[in-house]
Image (cartoon, rainbow, N blue to C red; front, side, top):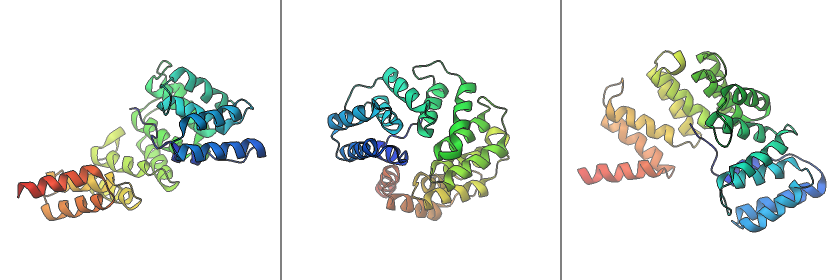
Length: 248
């Protein structure tokens, strides 16, 4: 269930919005230091800005402690920093505290609170839309509704959170949340995910054809999709192709 973005720079950059000029400049300096892997200096920069009440810096510092980048992982500190940012209605902070309630990290698991936080963030945050989809799919904090899950997953994908497209594939492949099993539709969304550089979508298509999951087994098609995933530097696909070659 746990699913936080582990590419720290991408997540932080996605949280950018203009604040006070000096705080924003310091925040940008912190981002540069993150890209360079200079965690101690980045932490100092974000801390300085966070202490002025800069929501993005509070969130970014919380994420560093949440993931343990350059410091020991500290969920209590992460939660406290996220909360300060959340109280300023910063969507990524709302989302990440929602994830903590969803997963029972530091706080007791509470699906109702998680869903409420995702709902507050979703208007301006693609990953929160994906999390709304997961809630509607699984009935977490809300009555299960596959149509709503489909809607939020597609919105998330369309707004740049590519995992939303992949989740559409799994929902249709497995009939999750009461949806009808529809493998052609699943294949479509896995391909859309791959076309948007989410290589696991191509990889799943390859597995479906290799294993004959509700479709005829088709080795040439399977190899085609493994190669497409490998072309995106997806390690499992590269390893799979090497294994298939060694078996010949």
